Length: 157
Image (cartoon, rainbow, N blue to C red; front, top):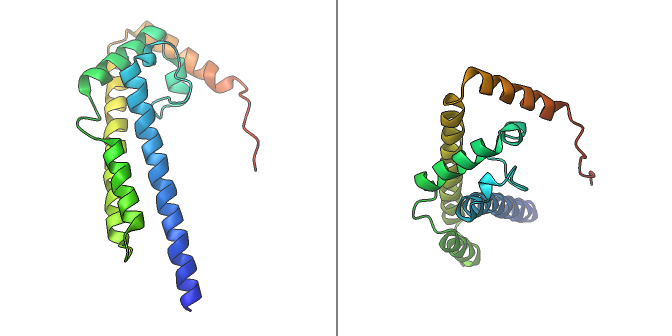
């Protein structure tokens, strides 16, 4: 029975670390994209605000305006991803291991990711709201075109 508990505990730790890594990656992409100003240079290469084809269908000037709105909104605020990584490392190294400490770090990261995504969605909706009916129709056409394009899919393992 102890072996089963050890395996479950190890699996849970791996899952939690992977979850945090994904959340940190998303937050890092948002911060990097917003701070660098690349959001207005066309569709971001690795981050699309969680809107998939919608982000790719937006006109360059709309993406630029959304990026400016996000920079003004500062969705990351005073959040320090490096400090969060340090807290994660401390929680992982703690002896005895405290799952609640790890959970708390991951929960904080998850909250921040949700705040960032919410700010991005607000900026997108605000920009689209400002479009004319004709501009929204053109966006809808581009969106449908995005959905109909065959995109290469990564190989499955």
